Image (cartoon, rainbow, N blue to C red; front, side, top):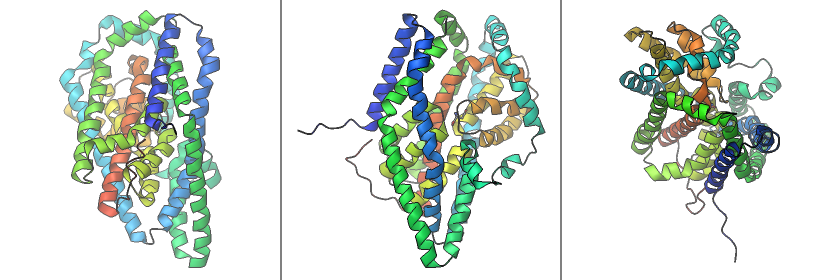
Length: 437
Ligand code: ASP
C-alpha cells in the first residue's frame, strides 16, 4: 500500500516543533551554544540560501512570461496602478491600527524604570552601530526609493536579492518589448522563459524537501541564541517588554485574521478557511525565515496551486509586494515608535502621529524583505518625530521574535492583494482540492 505523504505545512510544523524542543532542551541542559551554532544552524542557513537562490530567476522568468502573455499594455498599467494603490491603502490601515492600539494600551508607560535602564545599557553598543545607518538615511534624497527602481546593470541587480525591484522593472520592460516585436521572434524567447520558469518551479519542489529540516535548524538555533547564557535574565527582560510585544502581536493578529478576510471574502469571494489553508505553508516559511524575499518562491507556488491565482498575476503582484508591501512591518513600526516615545517620556501630538503614518508608510516601502530590516528603517520614523534613535535599544531584545510574526503578515498581505487583483482583473484557475499543502 502506498503511504500517504504528509502535506508540506504539516512537515514544516513538525520541524518547527522539534526545533523549539531542541532549543529548550539544549538551553535547559546548558549544552554548549557552539554545538547548535556549528552543526545545526548550517542546515537552516542552507535552506534559506537555496530559497534566495531561486528568487531572482523565478521573478525574472515568470514575470517576463506573465507580461508577454498579457498582450495588452494598457491592462498592464491598470493592474500596476491598482496593485500599488491597494498596497499603500492596506499599509495605511495597518499603521492606523498599530497607532490606535499603542495609544489605548500605552505600553511605554508600563515599562518598569529599572528594565528601561537595564535595556538602555545592555543594548547601547548594538544601537551605536546604527548611527552610521542614521547618517546615511538622513542624507538619502526623499525620492531615493523611486531612483532605486531603475537598475544600471541588469546582471548586478539580479545578483543582489535586495534589488529585487530592479529585476521586476527589467522583467516588465522586457515583457512589454516582447509584445512589440515580431511574433515569431517573440515566441522563441517566451518559450525559453516559460521552460526556464517550469524548471525553477521544479527546483523549488526539490528545495522544499529540505523544508522540515531547515525549519528545525532555524528555530532550534534561534531559541538557543535567545536563551543565551542566562535564561532567567532573558525571561525577565521579555516579561518587562510583554505589553509592547503584546500590542504588536495583537495588532498583527487583527490585521491578518480580521482585516484581510474582509477583503478577500468580500471582493474575491474566497472562504475564510479555504484561504488560510491554502497559504499555511507560505506563512510557516515566512515565520521560520523572517524574510519575505526568501519566502517568495513558496508564496508564488501556494498562490498558484492553492488559490488558483493565474501566473500573470502572481508573477507581477507578489515580487512587487515582497519588496514594497510590508503591512506587518509598518504596524510594528507604529507601535514601536509610540512605545519608545512613551518610555522616554516624550509626548506625541496629533501631528506627530500623522507623521508616523506618513513615515512608516515610506519606511515599510523602503524595508527590504530580509530579517531585521524593519528595525533599521524604524530610525526614519523616530527621526521624523524627534525621538532619539538610541531608543531602539529598548526593543532590540524582542525584535527577532516580532520579526517572525510581522513577516507572516507581510506575506499574507501580498497574497490577499493578489486575490483582489485576480478577482477584478483576471480569473481564478481551478485548484486541486485533494492536494492540500
Ligand atoms: N523581515 C521582514 C520581512 O522580510 C521585514 C522586517 O520587518 O524586518 O518581511
